[in-house]
Image (spheres, one colour):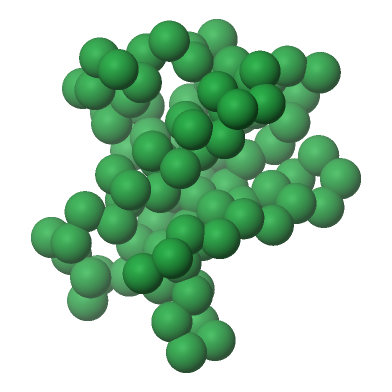
Length: 93
């Protein structure tokens, strides 16, 4: 499943679309020039155990790195994934 990204102004989302329906999403808000706040992560329960949540957080981390951004993970799920993954912690604000 491909992770896609869309952005409108300061608001953005990473998502996985299956047949026109988002089955996983992570939403963020850009604050300032160099920070993105992750405020929500959700995966359709029928995809439980497929690691889509971690994959979508990883996509956000890679995006942050590629664009010189730091992440403030307000979403408890995203915070947990980043805290549990030492190689993601370089992007923490």
